[in-house]
Each structure stands twice: as structure tokens, then as C-alpha cells.
Length: 452
Image (cartoon, rainbow, N blue to C red; front, side, top):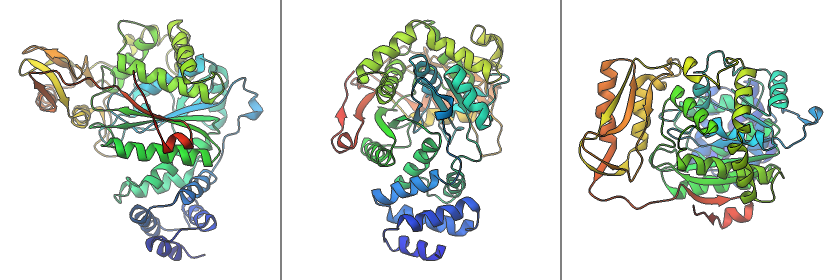
């Protein structure tokens, strides 16, 4: 086979065979196909798309391009489960969900990533814990999962290596937003992790990759269908990202909120609680640990209430190199910004609208995200006590607390945050955070609307 002929056929809108896709993926992984041809292939798929059969084949071949974790030899007494989010502002659900599902009987080998653009990354959040390791090899990773119940680490070089190279090319060739390539990228890594079940949190709104609900539905439908065809039990929830999730945005601040959430300190953010329990319920049902998602939610809520999820988070942090007493004394270890002052509301009224992407960029500009791949992150900066949509606010009352490294970045954050929040005379209509649920191919054709 010739790479250029495969590129030509896809460029002309023809369907590729699994053999052709396998040949090309192998060439990507082995670097026998140059970056120019990889880029041309990505652009051809971006413009011409792929059928479901092609997307399944691409996912399968990318999974097989490297090591596939096998859990059978560990004789785990529960299913291997995981969750993936399409990203958002303030999304610290992974920090809550992994120990929560583990406390309910699942085993969660969560391979996460760093921040992309205006969205935060789970690994960047965990890096604010002194000593926490995200670079375990497969043996160490599986040992921690077996002993603790969960581990959140970064991707290793031998899991789906074709995806790593293809993604790097997509990132610099404006081909990231291709649904077949997105689906194959997500699922190949999850299949390589040897999962029994996967739940997807597909977000839409001003702070999400999918700006529209229709786009989120299309992505969720594709992931459920392709996951099912690839032999992975898959469910998807479509959730709202028209405002930050939780009350913080910023790495150390989100770790602190997640730990307080698990400990039950103060009032839990209701939207964060709804999403966390819903995703946990889906996973427990997929893994056979609950008869349905409703029973799964109840079981997860019980593990949250009795403190067992918090205990597993503490054990995970220690097992992965964090301080032995981190969960008991997070304030002694998490970095703190030099400046912490309020951002005053410029007028009285109700918070009617948020440009959530712009709020994420405020955190990035403070130093909480990367402007380029080599940039360092300041884990201490960000926003806390963020007021949500519908909040009645008085003139000068804080829209949020700004955690900044210096006066210049603090002043810039104040101006940007005030510009990202619209205050009006009337409260906006209330909208649920959970919008739709898909847990089989049939649901992907006729998704279930959810209520709260």
C-alpha cells in the first residue's frame, strides 16, 4: 500500500478499508509515514469525514498501535471503569469521581491530560500537590489501582502512540475539530486502558469545545455508537457549560474545592454535586455495581456521605507521592497566591449571562494555564467564590475572589472578569445542568432528556 493513495482516496471522499486504515495507523506509530502525509490525512478526514465503520476501524487500529493494559491477572473484585470529559472551566469532577466510584466498588485507572486553551487540565490540578507523581509505568499504575481503588496519572508513551503523534499534528494544522478524529482519539486511549465501562461528560456552551447542544449531541452519539461497536460499554451525558462548574477555577483552588466537597466542608455546589453523582451512577450501572443509574447515584451519594470517598482520595494522593497528611491539612501544602482580593460588581442586579470561555482565559492570563506548550504554570492563581447565573448581586459585591501573583495581573483580571459577566435587572430562567443521556445505540438515536 502507498500512503499517498490512501490520502487520495479519502481526499476524494471514498471509504477506507480497515486494512488501509491499519496500514496508515501503523505508519504513524512507527514514524515510517512523514508528518506531511499525516497532516494531509488529517485534513482529508477533516473535510470528507468518516463513516461509523471507518471510525470504528480507526479507533481499533489506534488502540492496537501500542500496549493494551490487562487487568485479569490482578483478579480485581470489581469492574474497571473510567470517565472522560470534553473539558470546561472549573471542571474538577475527575478529582471527585475517581475516589467516589472506587469507594462504591469500582476500580478507576484514570489517564488524564493537561490543560488545553481556556480549559483546565486534571494533571495540572494534581501537580499543585507537592510530590504527586503522574508519570508511573504500567506496573506501578496497576499496583496503585489495585491497592487504593483508583489512580489519576498522565498518559504513558506506549499507550496508543499513534494517537499521540496524530494529535500533535492535528493541534498545529487546524484539524482538531474533526468528530471522527476526536472520537478515535478519546476511545483509543480508553480501550488501551482495558476498561469495562466508560462514561462521557460531553459539555456544551460558552465554556465548552462544543458551543451548541446539537454539536454536543452529535459527538455524544458518535462516542456511544463507536464505543459499543468496539466492545466497550459506553454512556454519555450532555451537560451545560454556560458557567464555570463549581465555585473555583484554577489548579490549587480546584483541588481544595474537590477535597472540601469530599469532606463535606460547607455547602457543596449543587451543580457540581448533580454532575458528579450522575456520572458516578452511570458508571456503577455500566459496571454491574447497580441495577440502573438511579440506584448507582444513590450508592455514590452514600459513599460521599460516609466519608469513604474522601478516604480513598487521601490514600491515592499519598500512594502517588503526596504528603501523608495532605487530605487532613491541604492548606499547609497547596500554594497560595500573593494577592487575594475581590472583583467588585460594577452594578446591582442579577447575573444574567457569562462568557465562560473568557473567564477561563482570565485564569490563563493570571498564569494558571499555558500560552504555549513550554510555558510554566502558577498553580496558586485563579478565581474562587465565583457567583453563578441568577445570583442577585449588589453594587460592589464580589463577583469572585481573584488570586493573583502581582498587581498588574490582578488589575487585568478585574477588568476582564467584569467584562465577561452580564448583569441585568431580571433573573435569567433557570436551566438544568444535565440535558440529555445516552447509554446505548438506541439512546444515541433517541436520546433521553434529563431533569433535575
